[in-house]
Image 1 (cartoon, rainbow, N blue to C red):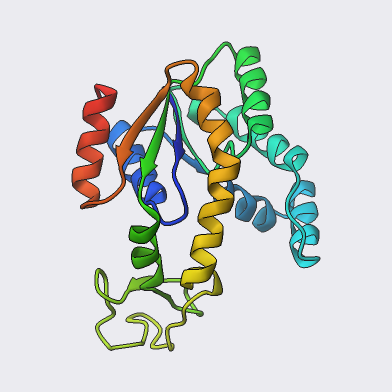
Image 2: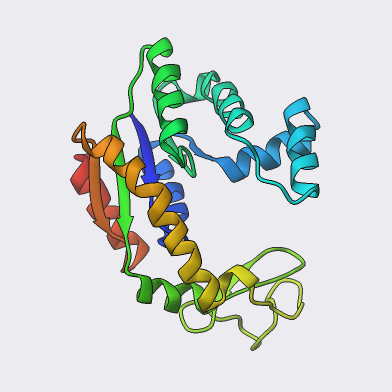
Length: 214
């Protein structure tokens, strides 16, 4: 089964992707992880990605699509996978359709985790990150043991610029513009399952599995 996860920034789709991957025994594939993998291995794609990021640009669809093509050709995805962060646009979705058709496969379901803008501002606005190890905390839901400091590194926690309320609302607007057509692309096929993104991760996982029949 190939699953695609949709949801605005902070909706918890990354958490659900990891939980689902473990529960269903299939790989969790995220564009962020693939970017880091190619950069770490020093591949030609990795070098291109690094150069684009260093210049402050955005990774193009062509590069992203090529990276996904390579990843989906590996043996570990034969029983299925969970795509997190891809596709992001209808163009990418159409590329994925073409790739899967060549492989004799199709997308199973598209899980859309729904969370209101106000709830996301509260959830994301409380996040604090360790600049050294990247550990993520939350002021109320997952606070560090020592206020304002990372439990592992002792470094002073920071709030990412993208996690500030004004930025969150802008990101939500951008997500809605880009994702509405993508969601419609899959909804027209009856593949979209809408889920409440608020609540305990375990409860959301249980409801997701119930809706999938898995």
